[in-house]
Image 1: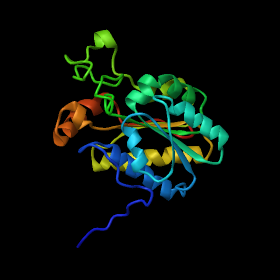
Image 2: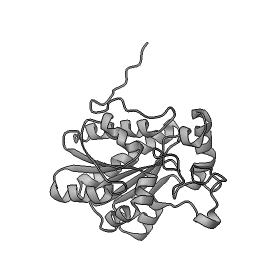
Image 3: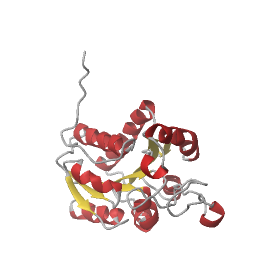
Length: 244
C-alpha cells in the first residue's frame, strides 16, 4: 500500500545539494506556516548563501537582504508591517560572521521576529570558507591545514550567547540528523512561531546540518560526521524556554 504524505502547498522544489539539510528545514517551516494559518501573511528576510534558494522553494513574500543584514531587514519589516509574520532564514556565515552585529542587536532589542540559522560549519555557497562555527581541525577553503583555534578562537555558540546574555522569548538548537531529532526540531519551530504570534519577542532556532559538498564527503559519511563530531560540541535542546 502506498503511503501518502502531505506536501505543503507553499513548498516547492528547491535546488540543494544531495544530503543537505536545507530541504528538510524548509519543509518543516512550510508545514508550520500552514498549521498556524500564516502562509498568506508572511514576509521572510533571506540571507546570502544557500538560503537564496528559498526563492524557488517557498511561496511567500521574500526580501533578499544584503549579506548578513537579515536581522536588520526583518526589524524594518516588523516595524513597517506589524501585523505580518516575519522570519529570517540564514546560514551561519551570514548570521554569525558577516551579520553578527545585526543578529545580536535584534536579539538585544528583543525584536518580535523568528530567526532560523542553518549551521553547517562553513560558508556553504560562497566556496566553503571557514566560518566562526567551523570545527577545530576542520579543513576548509581558507583553513587548508585544518582550523587552528589557537589562532582563530573556538567555534562560536551564538544561541547560548543570546539565551544567557539577553532576554529573548525563545532559543533552541535542533538538527536534521535523525527522524527523532527532526520531530523535535519541528517542535522548536512551533515554539518560535507561537512566541511571535503571542508578541513575546525574539526567537532563534539554530539547525545543525551536513554540507557534503564542502565537507568533501558523501551524504552518508557527512551524516556520520555530524552525529559523531558536530552534535557533541553543539548541544541540542532548548536554551531559553518560553515564559522563563
